[in-house]
Length: 231
Image (tube, rainbow, N blue to C red; front, side, top):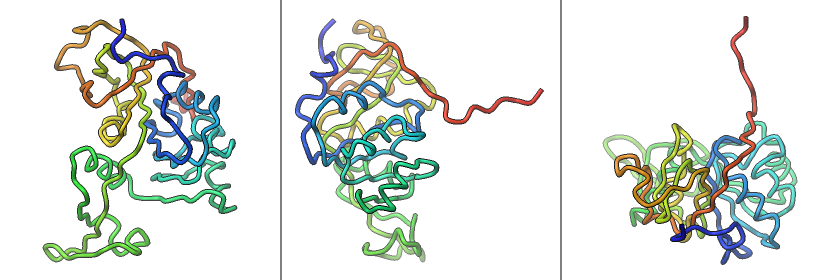
């Protein structure tokens, strides 16, 4: 099996200081854990991290913040990420927080070749500060620009050598939009199958949007807050 399959080291070829990297996952769920850790084995710094909330509990992408690898974070949620709160407080990292729908749509627009779009989301709030405003059908809309990135790190359940991907449930989260917005999309997958091993109707992201595939069969998959039904 060959095609787009690479080792972790090969997958990160071309990643350099100052680049932008979009990383899928929600908190610690569905993180491309091996790719995140592999970046720490390089000397790359000054990254712009595009992620829902940049890790949690000191794990996942929070390691990049701890190691000083990030210059800017574009995210939708801070929550209990103490490392992200710390860099906001000390001003060492620029942080841009935007609505989650706008976050996804900016990357989807980049993949679709749309330079910018108007949305009512964020109008009359701090999100609109410094942005062009126009009124449509009696509602104020603000102009948002497409968000293109150099690299995207995804986590998928199954892939073939061409890079066709199959996710499980909501684990797809931001992955497809990030892949479409990226110059180089890398998929970290649990299972590799031969061409034809994924039925056409089960392909959630076509391999045309995926440049590299890394096979990582085991993951920690940390649960942030385990909740069980009381007896």
